[in-house]
Image (cartoon, rainbow, N blue to C red; front, side, top):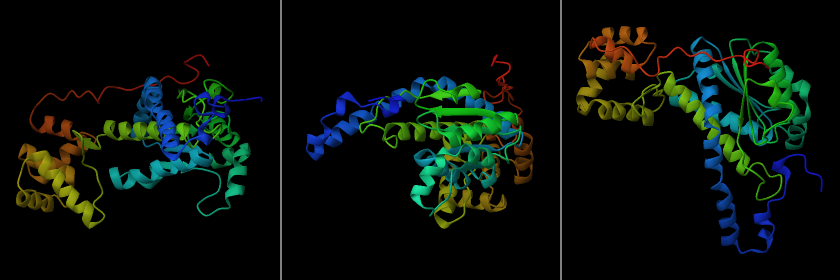
Length: 318
């Protein structure tokens, strides 16, 4: 049997999986799942490059684009959809692209992953200020290749996330986040380990990006959008947790801050009025720690404030 990719190969550990009772089947699947996190860890240096590039691009007004087909495309949609409610990111700043859309015929949708030209068309809105991530377990999906080629031609920063160490797409991009997940428990079923790896990679990418952009204070979400009663309650609890103030005080300062959690947080921690806190946050590009340092006449140096610069493909000698 000719195998073009490790993701299509047979896994010697699971050749008898169809003879086992349910609990043992689940045990084998879980054993394979346990290999994913270490594989992602090995790719963290490349993922960090992608995050640092995204900090610069996003901070300058650029957009983050995810391109993927099949499972990869759906994982991109899932990550992009979570960022507006969690970190108050405008929906157009992180965009997921995939062939077709919700409710489309599944067979037609899967077939369109072979359409390289469709990938190019979907990348028409990409600009030189953007960062584009292509998601493909096999490292060779034509739809993703077309999108990355078009994005690279426009001068966008390009990233490939795949479970293949080489291949034609890997040579096109600025950074290749290769996650060595190996053969799947069921040969070719990349919704398993490869899909899990992509989810972990995007979890890390988008969360680290939001942290670097000042969307958190400590490990608390301070840019959460209070769009319903559950989230409004969460905002109040976050303010109490971060400041140690009682509920009544937090509720009052939050009202005085027009519901702006960051403004209320700085006001309570420093003792300034909301207007001064708001101005300090604006000067600090929304970073709570920097705003507090400025208002406290403290050290303005912050480990997230270093000047990031990422080499282009040309500077890397490609």
